[in-house]
Image 1 (tube, rainbow, N blue to C red):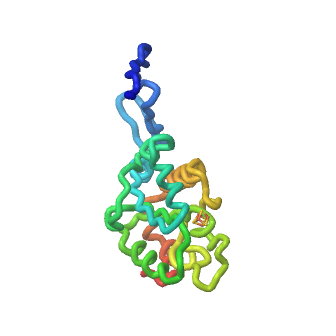
Image 2 (image 1 turned 60 degrees about the vertical axis):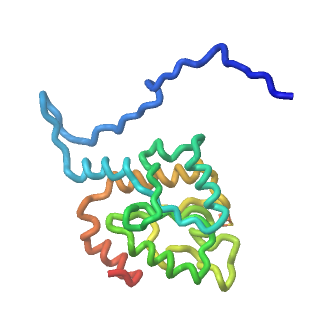
Image 3 (image 1 turned 135 degrees about the vertical axis):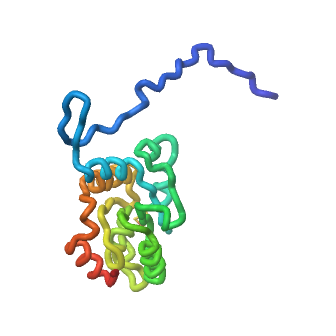
Length: 196
Ligand code: SF4
């Protein structure tokens, strides 16, 4: 027997007024007809609201990432819906899952193929520290092969935790000086990983 057709007799009025958000203006000086600020602030504002993630998902934490991308949590709200699978087009490497030692050189190569500036999130216990897999075959944290900016705890972390980690990255990106990548400190960090 076919189902009866139901109609919504009280349809909700669609309104976008509450759904739109605006980025806050960076610090600066304003007066009548002008506003000045630092170039770093403007670049940081643009970068933090247009991150392009590269999901490197090898196991269960990747499923949580799928939930994070879905309409309920909706990473697109942060300007990051453009998930890419070409390292050359992405600036945020999100590593989710157990990384076997055999996989480590591949992860490192993907990182190296990303253009500067690039940031890295280790999502979940496995990516951060090897998690429960304290075995000969599992990398005990991706920071053994590439530098990590934010660690998201949990096994698996809930989508809220992934969003929290993402927002921490946005904070870092927004505040980062455009000169940081040329600094001695940054070069020392990379050379510690054998990266020129
Ligand atoms: S942290 Fe837990 S949920 Fe995530 S990949 Fe490892 S075992 Fe799976």
